[in-house]
Length: 219
Image (cartoon, rainbow, N blue to C red; front, side):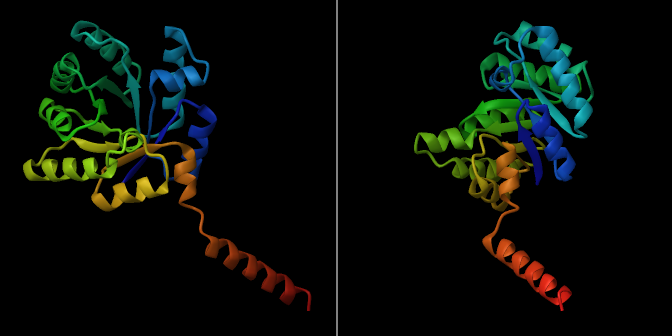
């Protein structure tokens, strides 16, 4: 399972990269705005800075919602760095654009997916990744992990190469649930990745080891 971090914060991206388990980054306009990044040139430079930190794919989202401008923005983003994956919304013109990009060899991430039918369309169009937002589904009392399971079943039925990128992952239970189902990728905040480190028995066991060592050393 690949671990992506869902942020535009360079310090958090570097921390995840330094941990040695990071496979990529996902971003969106909201995350850019959260970091105070605005203006086309600043956004482009920020994407370049992210690519300089990570080894894997970096999803960069288009703003346009019509076919021609999605293509224009997507090609410009893809030209920034081979690591860039063009993030396209699950809309009619978005699906058309994904097909265009896939034929041109440009990697894509179909975002804002909330149903198995949408995921099927994205795969048919040749998306590199499909991003079901499981946390947002849970927010409206719909089983987000259940959607991951449905998509996994459909993709396995037909051998689709599109990778399931579980998005809006809120906590370790989400992450582990996705891993059990067989999601190819998860993306979430750094806190979700770091939460896997913690277990009370690890903490108490380490404390005991250190106390025993100190006691033995003092003899």
